[in-house]
Length: 454
Image 1 (cartoon, rainbow, N blue to C red):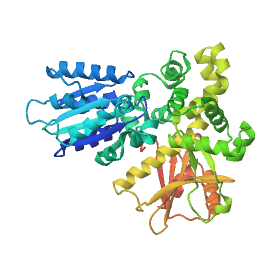
Image 2: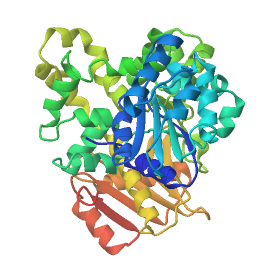
Image 3: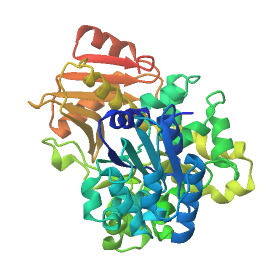
Image 4: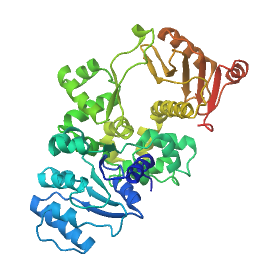
C-alpha cells in the first residue's frame, strides 16, 4: 500500500523537534490519510480518535470512552481539558495525539480547540507531545478553518500540511510490475491519487483495470469524479456541465458561454471554484516575444481522473448501461486513448527535466519551466534560466518515431513564439528517425531521451 512518503518524512521531522507541536494535516478522500497516520505512529506512543458526525455531547462521550479504555483512567469533570490532562506516554517519550476528522468537533464545540491550545502550551499534559488535527474536508480547511478556530489558534498552529497526489516517479515505484509506458498510461488515467493507485493492479493490463475499476458499476472508481466534485462544491449540475464541455474541447471562456448558455460572469465564478480545488487550471503560455501568436485564457481539467471520466465515460453513459465493459472500452476508449495520453507524456517529461535540474544534470540551471500554446501549433516544453537562455522540449507519444518533420514544426512554432534555444530535448516513447539520430550525433545541442531513460 502506497502513501505520500515526502509528507511522512515531513511529519517525522516535526516529531523529532523538541517541545510541543500542533499541526493540521488534510487531504481529499483517497489521499490515504489513515495509512499515513498508521505509518507515523508505528513504534511511537500515541492516542488516536476519529470524530463522528454526532451531537456535541455524544462526541465527548465517545472521546471519553475511548480515552479511558486506552489509558485505563477515570474521569469526573467530563471535559476535553480533563481528557488531555489524563493522557500519558508512561515515560519521557514524546506522545502523538491524533484527532482525525476533527472538523466534526471544532464546528460544534469551542472548548475542544481551547483544550488543544492548553495541551500544546503544557498546561495540561506536561510531557512532550505532537498534536495532529486531521481532516478530509479540504474545502472546510482551506476556506473556513481559520474563522472556526479563531485567530489565537491560527497563530499557535505550527504548520498546515496538505496531502497531495503522488508525482510520476512515486507512481512508478508504486507499480513495480509495470514498464514505464504502462505507468504513464496509468498516471494519465487516474493520476497520482494514493487511494486510486492502491486499487490498481499492476499484474493486470490497462484494459482489465479500467473495466474492473472504472466501467463496472460496482467498481471502486465508478462515479468517483462526481463524488470528488460534490465533496467540495455545491450545484453539481452546473459544474458537470462546464467540465463536460471543457472535456469535449470547449476550452475558452467564450466557447463555454456559447456551449452552456450560462453567463460569462457565472462561468467565471464557477471556474474559480473549480480551480481553487485543483480540478481545473488556466493554461498561461510561457512568456515569450510572440504573445500575439499565443492563445490566451485556455482551460484544462487538471485532475487526471476527472479529465478521463468526462472525456471518455460521461458522454457515453447510456451506452455503458447497455453494453459490456470490454466492448465499451474497445468502442469508446481505445481509439482516442493515445491522443489523450500525449498531454500526460509531456507532463512526465517536464517532471524528468525538473528532477535532472535538482541533481545538477542539466546543461542550464533552470529558473522556470512551462509550455507555449499557440494559435497554430504548440511548444511542449520551454525551460529558462535567469539570463533567459532556453531549453526547448519536443515530446512524441503517439507516433512510431520522432521525425525530422516534427523537429521542423517545432522550429516553426519557435519562430511564432519568437524564441531561440541553446538546447533541445527530444523525447520519444517509441524511437527516433535515423536523420534525427544523425542530427543529434553531429549537433550536441540536441539531446535524445527515450522511454527507457524516463
